[in-house]
Length: 192
Image (cartoon, rainbow, N blue to C red; front, side, top):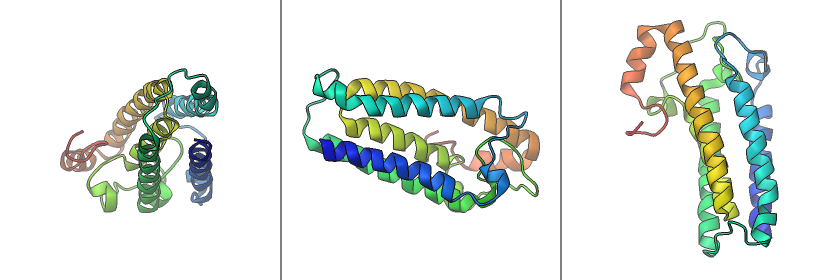
């Protein structure tokens, strides 16, 4: 199990590394919030903090058999596959969106509605990637407490972020965004 824990930590560190490294533009790097953000960036930061702290203490829970799921390593490897899938989706979303991939909700100079690549199928693939990363990490840890608490933190946070972001994009782009939204799903292809 120690190797699984270490892999989870490496993937989480890699996630934060690429988040910092891939952002080149000042608009993409800054944490300066616009009126559209509605504290979503702060809530995401708090959710990340809770998730990371829980992932750090989960091995202790498992050692004392508190919430430990004893299902063999297959369950843990499924979690690792989910993490990798999340990272690939997040990186693909970042590369496709480019300089419009900002940390906070804002409309940047010469902003456009991006509807190619992965955005042809879902409107918020970056958020899907992050959700998969953290839920996959909790599954890899093999602890029901971690799975429940991380899911309960991350999912509502991103549902609120998506709602807030869509309001901003409709305000900024009007019918252009509404037409795009009718052709795609928010987070899960063909479903929602």
